[in-house]
Length: 123
Length: 262
Length: 141
Image 1: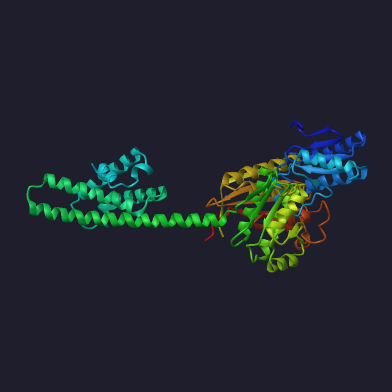
Image 2: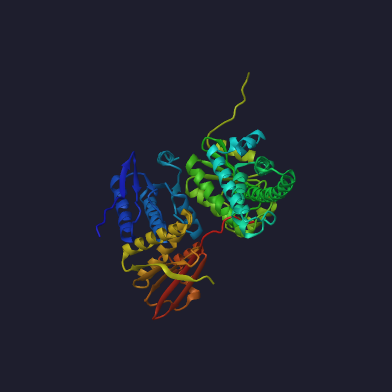
C-alpha cells in the first residue's frame, strides 16, 4: 500500500511546526520523530510546536513517542508547545493515564507562538 | 360546522395548529366515530369496536399536550362535537321523545369519550413535564463571563454519568469559546462520591491538555477530604467563591475592572 | 449475560503495522454504527490500538473480531493471537510488565476505557483479550 505522508514539518517564525497526520503507524511515527529532531538540530531553532489536531487516537505508543520528541528537543535546547488536542482524545488520554512529558499545551497557534517567543527571550 | 363551533368557543386551536392539521383531526375523528357507532354499541367504550377511535383520540391528546394546549381546550374539542351531533339529531328527528332519548344516549357516549381524552391528555402532559425536569437536572448551564472566560456553576446531584457529560460539555465549550480560563464552581455541591471526584480531577487534567487553565471554587470540606484521600491531586487553582475565581481569571488574562470616575 | 451474536460481526487480520490502524478505524466505524458517541468511539479505538499492538508485537500477529450484542446495545471486541502467551496473568498489570514498551501499561489503560475486560493467556498457546462496551442508558430517574 502506498504511503502518502501528509505529515509536515514547517518553519514558522523562528520555530518548527510539526503536524503529524492521522493513521500514522509505528514505523512512520518513529521516522517522524527522527525527522523532527534532525530538523531541530539543522535549523537551530529554540522552539518546537506540535499540532495534534489531525490525530484521532493517542495510545501509549504515540504518547511515548511524543514524550521522546519533547525530551530530546529539550536536551537540544528547544522548548516544546502543543496545540490542537481534540476533546475526545484528551479525555481518553487522561483516563488511560498517558502523559506527554515536557510539553506545554496551548489553546491555539497564536497563544503557542506567544509562549515560545517568551521562552526564547528567557522569560 | 364543528370547526366553527370550536373557534367560537375561543380556544387556541387555530393559533397552535395549522388549519390542515385541525381539518385532518376532525375528519379522522368523524370517520372513526361513525365506524364505532355503526356497531350500535353506544354504551361501552372499552369494547373492541371503539379501539380505533380511542387510539386516534390518544394520538390527538398526545399531540396537543406537546403543542401546549390546556386540558380545557382538549375537552372542548369533543364537547363541541356533542353540540354538532345534537344539531344533526334535531334535524333528522321527528319524534320529540325519541329525540330526547337519542340525545341522552349520545350525550353519555360523548361524555365518556371526552373524559377519556381528558385523562390521556393529562397523562401525556405529566410525562412531558417530568421529562423536562429531568433534562434540566442534567444540563450544566455555562456562564460566558467575558471573552475567553467561561464558568460552570454546577448544581444538583453529581454522579459519574453527569460528570462524564459535564467533561464533554466543558471541553467543547473551551474549544468553541477559546476559553483561556474555565471556572468550575462547586458551591452548590455539598458532596460527591470518590468515583465522581476522580472524574472531576480527570476533567480538569483534560482541560489543561487542551491549553485552558481551570479554576475550582467553592469546594466544601466534605469534597475536599475526598479529593485529598484520592492522592491524585487537583492540579488547579482553588478558591473559595466564584467571585474570587473571576478575579483571579481576570488577573491571569491581564484584565482589570476599573471604576468610572464621573 | 447478554449474548453476542455472530450475525453482525467483522473480522480483521492483524499481521503488520498498518493493520493496527485498520483495526482501530474499523472498530471506530462499528462503534459509531451502534450509536456510540465520539468520546466512546475514541475510547474503543484507543483500546483496540493498544491490544492490537500487543498481539502484533508480543504475539506475532493475530486477528480481531468485532461483534454486536443481540439487543444492539453493546459492542464486543475479541483480539486473539497464537503467540508465546503470558505465564502469570496477575503480574501483567503489575510491576513486571510495566516498563515502557511492555504489555502492562497498555493493558491497564485499555481496561480502564472499557466496561468489561477479560484477559486469557496460556504459555505456548496464545492470548485472547475480550473487551465489551455498553451504550449509556440515558436518563436515570
